[in-house]
Image (cartoon, rainbow, N blue to C red; front, side, top):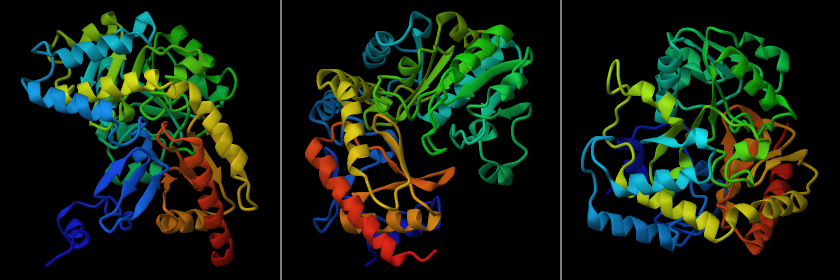
Length: 400
């Protein structure tokens, strides 16, 4: 009889030749459990998804209650569904009035696709500006603006009229002009290795967009919902976009995405033609119920406010001769090591030390630390001790 590992490789499409291959049968809080009692501390939150931890009781209750009421009813936008309405209204309490209209979709990539279409439709322009080493998803439009030619080249031809500026390089912003429909930027570059914006850079992007009447899109799919120590990174940098993209933690562990703008801008998808963006399962009621419950937990348990103290503790404890830097804000951190071989070693060896760690797509000199925001001090201290032991082993076994 074939094992689950064998069936996984035989019947599921693979994303790479070297998946983590961990078999998980249960998860709760910051831990995941294997079939033979293995216990792993999740230091990546499913890539910034499980901000309130795995299976938070209030999220599970919201899912069960909504499943008892109804599941899918109709394609998005036709029937008034209370979970969608309640979540959109609650989100608006944390956003400026210019971001008061939410369009729910299924994922971050779909949020990007919808936002690009919206910007082109509203402005009547075609040019799209993104940034080198940015990541916005892997669907066709999102891939067209991705910041790595290595991942894009095999799928050309992609969308035309797309250009890239350099993050934190003000001079490169000159490519934003009156032909530009939108500029899409991560306030903090995630897959680039947690690159923070230099003082004033996002303000310059905002100013350039305002001058040219291009729409500014903030991709907060990875930084949203307390991840950087603020509910949204835009709060930290005090720059408001014209369109905001959310996903990952938006669904509280369920698949959900959104692009958010003003009623005026969003109305561009309503007519000429109608159905400017349409999605069958976008804003699924169970996903919206889970997301709303999760966002309320962030507030009720003060998880956003406590995030920065936890960040400082990680930075204090992660002191090792192999660590060149621990950079980032909140619980979105990158630990820089002297060579990519060290990164490969510790990612593959981490489960033996009871940890789950991960790479960055566009930064091979650092590994990711982005645990659920519910992680406590004792769990942080234990995780850091294990990381230091792991680094000791890597130092002995890796030959550069």
